[in-house]
Length: 316
Length: 202
View 1 (cartoon, each protein chain N blue to C red):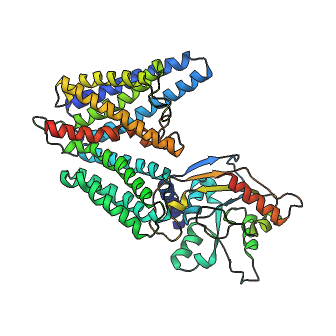
View 2 (cartoon, rainbow over the protein chains, first blue to last red):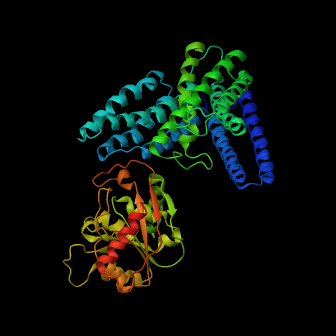
View 3 (cartoon, each protein chain N blue to C red):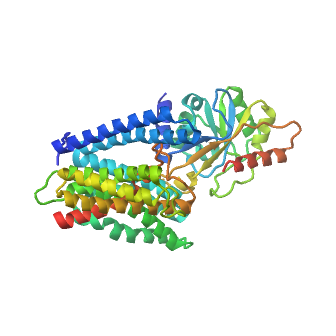
C-alpha cells in the first residue's frame, strides 16, 4: 500500500478508456440536443446530458481516490456511506428515543468500520456491524425507554446500516484481498465499479430504446425486461472484455460480470421498493440528473459484498 | 470582528451538518428589510435559517431570543451578543420600562431584518403552537415591513430539545410569500392567518 499517486499501467489504460467513453457520450448528448424537437424529447435529453456531466465529476473523484491507494479509496467510500446513510435515515420515520442510537451510527460505527478497512483487519471488519453494532443498537434504543413500534424502528436502523455502510465498505475492502498471483487490487475495484455502473447505464439505454414489458410496474415503472436483459448481457460482454485487469480468465470474468450485474439489478429494485413505500422518487438531490448518492450506488450495495466473497473464496 | 469570523465558521458548519435544502415557495430573495417568522423545535433553527440566507442578508439579519436563556452564562452571552448579534428580549414580562416589542421595533428602525419564533419556545416538532402576540404589535408599529413565513423541517430530528449530540440528517427550509397586516385586521385573525400560512408550507 502506498500513499503517493500510483497506478499500474493497466489501471491507467482503463481510466483512460472510461474518459474516452465519456467524451463519446458527451458528443452524442450534444448531437441529440441539437436534433430533438419535441418538448418531452428535450426534457429526456436535458436529463441525459445532466447525467453525463455528473458522470464526468464522479469519474474524476473516483479516479483520484483510486490513484491515491487504500487511503483515498477508503476515505471516498466512507464519505459515500455517510451521505447515503444520511439520505436513508432522513426518509425513515425515527422517533425521539432513537436519537442517541443514530448519533452512534453516524459518528462511531461509520468511521470505525472504515478504519478497519484502512488497517485491513479482515476478521473484525466482517463481523463488527452484523454482530457488535446489530446487538448494541436495539439495546441502546431500549435504554431510552420508548417501546412504540420498537422492533420496526430497530430493524429499519439496522437495515440502513447494513445497506449504506456494511455493504458499501466491501468495495474498498477489495484492496485488502490477498489473491494468488495477483497484486493489482485497484484493478479489481475498478472492474466491479465499471461493470456495475455500466450495467445501470446500459439497462437505461436498452430500456429507453426497446423497453416495453415492465419487470415490476408497482415498484419501478422504468425497469423493463428488454432493458434488464439487454443491459445485463452487454455489461457481461464488457466485463469479459476487461478480464486483463482482473485475476480472472475471460470466461471467469464473464461469469463474475453476470453475477454482479444481476445483483446490481436486485439492489436497484430493492431500493426502488423502499422509495416507493416512502413516497419519494429519489433518495436525495446531491448529484444532478441522478438523484442522491444512494440512488447512484444502490446497485453497488448488493454487488459489492457478493463480489468480495466470491473472489475471496475462489481466488484467495 | 472575531465574532464575525466565528459567525461565518458557524454558518459553514451548520450548512454541512444540517444539509439544508432551501426552497422558495412564493418568496424571491431580494435586498430590503423583512421579518422572517418560523416554527421552532431546535436550537439549530435560527442558525440553520440564518446560514441559508445570502451572506449580505445574513450580515444584517438578527435573531430575536430570550435573555433569560442567553444571558445565563458568559459563553451564551458572547454567542448571542457578539456572534449572532441577537436582539435579546425579556420574555418574563418583569421589565415594565422596555417591552420585547420596543426592542424589535428599535432593531427594525436601525435598518436590520429580524428572525422571530412567534411560538415563543421550542416545540416537539409535530405541531405549531399558537402564536404569541408580539409579532402583531411589531406589525402594527412597522406595517410597511414584509413578514416572511419560514417552515423549518427535520431540525427537531437533528438536534431535539434536550440533546447535545446531533444526528446529521437532511433538513429543509421553505420560504413562503411575504405577508402584511391587513387594515382593520384584529389581533386574533392576524395571528391565526400567519400561523395558517406557515402551516401551509409544511
